[in-house]
Length: 290
Image (cartoon, rainbow, N blue to C red):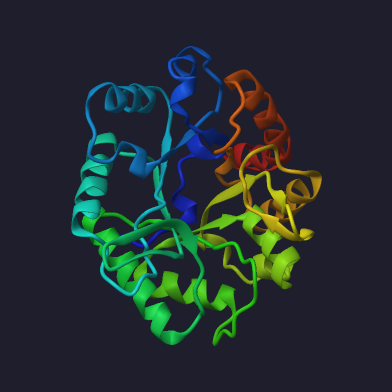
């Protein structure tokens, strides 16, 4: 299995994509948008057939796809559920998405699934758990994946800085990184992470995708605690941090995440244009070289 290399990313995904929602089907098939790609939450289509799978197949015939998993619990203390991996591997083999990603989090213990992306202390033992999880996932699907940085809501006592932790993970597994820009922005606000320093410490070749989304203030703590809610458009500060990341990494697939209070497809595509305006100058550089 080849290690991830951002230089090998196809130009078909060097643009802004959006989250695929079934309520937008079949409009997504008729509203052809140049350079579009779609993110699919992997678990929504695992172990299913019928109309749901047929919709995904039709989407894959028209657009590049990025599978984004939320349930593997890669950093958990136990091996990934075998049935889960079989479902994911079968779906990846059948649909052949351009990119596959998961989270550097844990979400299950002793057959209990917590439906949340839980953080962890960055210790050597937890790093080994995450390495084991990534290796298990990659072996099951037969390809390198991207692993997303977590959002932080409070501070832990860590043994390693997160950029070092994530880079060592790539070195020992061959995976790449999905850098969530909003996660960095929220972590900076909530727990003092320096988002720009973090970006500067990640090697360019490791980053295969960037995410941005809207966030919300906690109803009690207000702006002192920002929540990764994915329920409206990203603000100007997040777009500026995205531009900073693109200056370092160059053109990358950028996903506009929108998972709650999802607008009509026309509005979602309108919001996509604002993100595409940030990315376009970096795409022009790729086109000029090519």
